[in-house]
Length: 176
Image 1 (cartoon, helix red, strand yellow):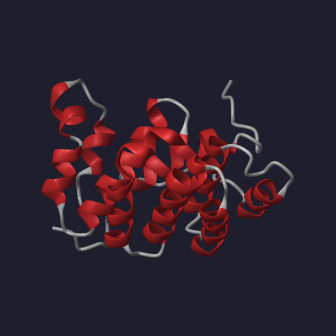
Image 2 (image 1 turned 45 degrees about the horizontal axis):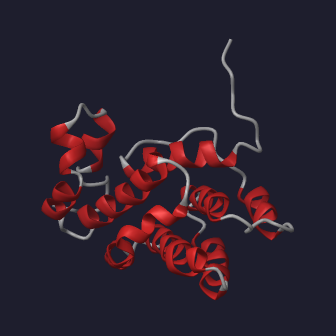
């Protein structure tokens, strides 16, 4: 018996699908962008950085660039530093990636630096941000820099084939 994620399991689905997209694979069991917009607009929809990050990933999987701009603006205007200084640049970078502007995404995520850890969650969330930066670097014509970024994951420890795929040009990008 196969167990499927419930429609409300947006975060888990989004994280998996975003990583698949970054590696040039096809996502499955996508989220409904209208439902994600409802979650974001609901009272408390942006109460937590981690929750908002996962909702933004769901929008990124759907290439909903315009929908990403609203939470990015709200996070940038938020009084809480984690929203302003960590979440806003990450969501802006996701919007840049979905709009085909990898250089802008790479610049935003590079400037983010150690603040990425303020997104919350566990290692997976930090790796997703790092993976997004690596994909942006590859697509912006800097595959060697992306390889240096992921060096510890692809050479020092046993790694998943996904991490090797991540360092290859995305289909149709013309990256070297």
